[in-house]
Image 1 (cartoon, rainbow, N blue to C red):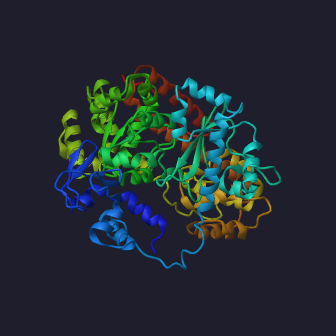
Image 2 (image 1 turned 60 degrees about the horizontal axis):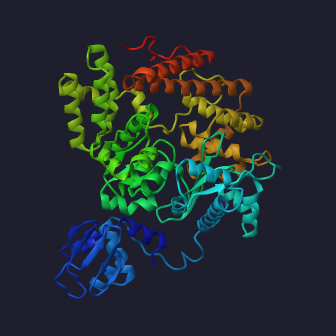
Image 3 (image 1 turned 45 degrees about the vertical axis):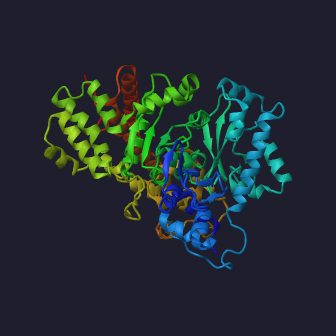
Length: 599
């Protein structure tokens, strides 16, 4: 037999129009494809195939999905049909014995409890007084109940024990709620607390439509404004796109995907009929998210907010997509507008005119630099080219790469040969940005005070010192986000240490680590501990904070040429503040810091 997840993967990735089109002559008619029915040997175009994944004959009424078509037309059984379609879709289909698949899918327990929580959140939003603040908020955002229900939007009440009690009555005990991330325990002996309180809830689903996590928007004051579920065996934030299970068929049909920043943007556009819309869960677009999107289309329109933060996110996402070989277009909305407000005010047709006017991401970057006068003299031209080089290097498609080189050389007034030499020598900053999770070299084991130029060794020493002196764990949790550690092994060890109880022995901790981190964990255990752990700990924290500040200053320098007026003044003020923070930590003025504003 073939596992269900493989069958679903084949179904998702199969191009039914292409498969049917090999056996039936099809022609596009509106949003579907028409041809003569192969089942009753018709001659008129009464047989319709939808890119969404189905077919129907309006005369003999044969209908079904891609597997049904292959079974009936080629005389295959279901298993062979899946294998046939899988070969066409580039999915390796292997059968497994029934003994291997006996028993429930271990992920089922997560899907089950998340579905129950989603139902509770939805009912709480609309029934009774608890959901009143959220209903008022939706009314202010001009989002009606029909739309909210379509996307499963709900509400997690401020009263923390209600969801816990409700799930308990359904048979989901505290341990299962903690495992799923709906409850969390801050420290040993404390009562479990709900992760989401007083938040408008957006269910997050996998491509098959199973609820795997939630995104919560706080109602009123509170931080963070948006909070996602913790990662779990069914949810990896950086590998999930909000709305994909609704949008995937439309993306294939439209041969494009619209990428927006937030939940509301995605909901608003889909409700308006622009269904090929997804969002990256409120974070910068990741390579895995781009790879996921690549299964459905090769063209992406970036539709981010029109402010400076949105522009910065646009170009970062553009580079990620270019590395995956996408054709990337940027949609520019009027100042002060975001996709949610724009579509709500002007509707789908007006947005479609902006989509039609979208330009290539590299051309948009050039446009901003040209309007800012950054090609007017040699000094500013050098800075402008530095801003363009990462995007040129990101272009994986050879033709796109060549066009970018030719266009940049033309605008800057230099030869393509000179530009090509520069492109073959990537800057250290760009190498760091492209490989943020590389493994680090091992420093001398007994070194107590860190070298001043090694944030990587600071990561290692921090993990080592809290491993030997576990009374420092709580302090580390307050000062360091595990995601800031670049080495994937150290990040896993650090995260497991923060989640361990004071009495957990090292074998218990090691047993929870991913395989790739176990050897390093054991190595750190065997190394002698520092004589002055407090000093080492403080040095590590200082080093990591200096690295973080330095990277923010690099980002500001990169963004300065793309700003003007008040936004540029704000960046310069932030630059000054960060340099002040850097000096307070004992670091020198960042080497790339400009003391004067470019004129």
